Length: 155
Ligand code: GDP
Ligand code: MG
Image 1 (spheres, rainbow, N blue to C red):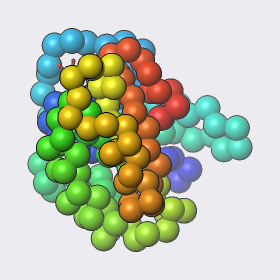
Image 2 (cartoon, rainbow, N blue to C red):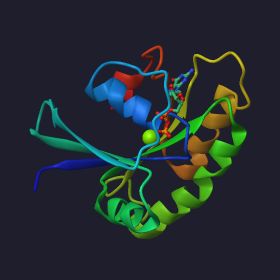
Image 3 (cartoon, rainbow, N blue to C red):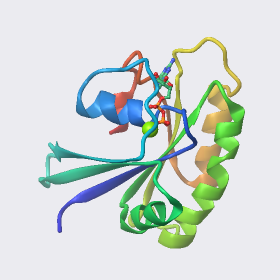
Image 4 (cartoon, rainbow, N blue to C red):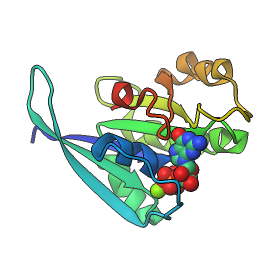
């Protein structure tokens, strides 16, 4: 299959659904709707290969999450810059993904995302997030689903 599967992970409330919704539907919803399990399919306009990009927004049970992790080609690890704890909570997820997928960036691309960069109240600076790039061998971006900052660049 030429499908490219992107898995979006992170603690509740960091803005996973908002990022996916911003990307897929181009809008933002202020109200919080807890996700059970959401898979968005989006045609991926890519210069060299055409395929579907499956964006899986995970808040399902552990079992569902593990399935997603096994099938993912790329992982978007989302925390909120307004809550340091959400960055810390990504560590075990990061380790799980590396365990399942290995370290090769060809097999598994990881992007660390600090969402809600529009908020003036911060607990995590851009520098603190960027410090993970070398440690985790990943890419890093700050985004705002609300203000539509870096969402296109991310996906
Ligand atoms: P999820 O649990 O990770 O899927 O989080 P949601 O996408 O449901 O978002 C949780 C809450 O954060 C909602 O109230 C959103 O409106 C809000 N939110 C999401 N993204 C942003 C953002 O970029 N900036 C701000 N200020 N709020 C956001
Ligand atoms: Mg959600």
